[in-house]
Amino acid sequence: MKWILLSGILVSSAVIADARTFYTPEIRCLNDHTIPFIQSDIPPKKVVDDAYVKCQPELNEWMKLQEPLPDKIKQDMRKQLYDFYIRMIEIRRKYEAEKAVEAAR
Image (cartoon, rainbow, N blue to C red; front, side, top):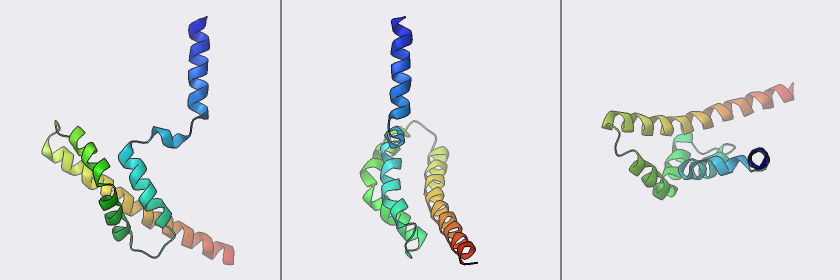
């Protein structure tokens, strides 16, 4: 019975907890340094490049965790993460522009 109660408390606390607490440090940092600039006129590549500079300590830790992986996989993972942030900004800007056009009609 205690285990059921304890399980219920743990599940409840997980639901109540801020979703950001489940992000890894490098993702939290990259989000903090890219998402606020979605509405800006700064080119997406520059936003992501600047975020990568600011998040270098977190990214270095992430890269240390990847050391056992083959080089090809490490390179692919890093490129995919970088490309993801550029695409995210581009897609969000496109969506916001389309939404503004719709609202103007």
